Length: 487
Image 1 (cartoon, rainbow, N blue to C red):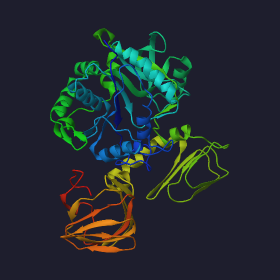
Image 2 (image 1 turned 90 degrees about the vertical axis):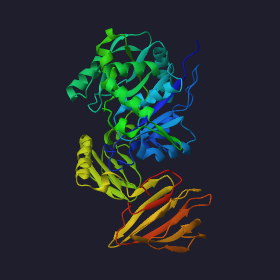
Image 3 (image 1 turned 30 degrees about the horizontal axis):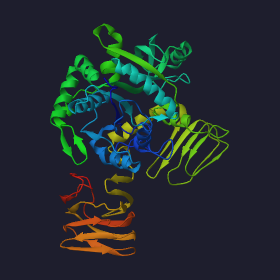
Image 4 (image 1 turned 60 degrees about the vertical axis):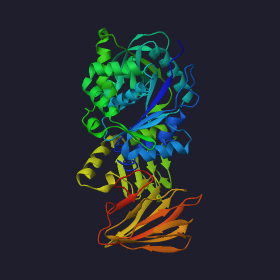
């Protein structure tokens, strides 16, 4: 019997709260280049390169919210790492349902005996070789019938992470999983680290497909049943697979840890076994601005700067500029993050409380909690430049070969000015080209479409005028991307 095949499963969830204002609900941190030129999602996919094993490693299976589907597909296309499939969740239900849906999908494809390497899409791992060695050891354990988690060897007494306590050794570089521990206070965290018996909880796992399905059916049959129904009713949508919305929305939310791993560790007599493999690979879940400060190179005063930043007599501070010059004088232990529509200033020791700011923004119905001024669409981006009474100005970028939907607006007219590239415009019954420094006008109620027939991005300015300028003033007649109400 050969070695079981390895299927990476990338969990690309997230609500965009902990790294606000850079991350937002519709653009969470895995889509940001926070620790290098590639985004965290791209780094996660590239981390699989060289992860060879006798049974082979398949392309990754990605589970994400349907609102992020085009971002996932485009970012993986940019690094030429095509996924095996992208499963779409209609709502977030934490990691246990996401993994169960992935496992059911693999089992239906005849891969019940395969192994799943479960990775969140928003982690940083500096030492890929060390990560590969830990995965190789975990594969050995999983092939022998273990549910395996990765425990990060702690570098400090950290209160922002959960911990894993190890049990007896299981040969080289592995231990029986004793228990999971909630995020501790500072004194308890110091005790954990000094004891040498605890790891940080990485949120990464490796396990056989069939064994996970057995474990979730035993310990959370309600989750298993809901995911089974969601997978039975799933439908293909272009390159995506949409889980049936009603069943998945009704699924209880729970994490892999709580739903299964803690119970297996506490009830070893039930026939299921769990192990932990140490991981010393420069890991971070980039769960707060302080964590991002930790992973970046610092100057002599302990500062980290990103973008156009000028510091004077400042120490131990993280400053990120994303459009304007940011200057700071005489500050210590701060986080300052500038974006076009919001600025965050926080004590570095209290950045976990940024969530409270986002909650207040959501309660007030403010867009800053949900999206950036620049909005990503499958065809490109648009950015609001100015808004006034009965008018709105946007900068639109259309990717090469891409097209907006054939649409119509009831309440607004649009003026388009091409500043770079060539646009193919459909307006009513006519189709024509508009080149640089040329413009055209789309009256209220006229069907229209904007396309980029060229090999370079099309850039244009759109001036909207009318009694209502909301994005929901749209009637869509035809769309290449199978969208409903979004632009």
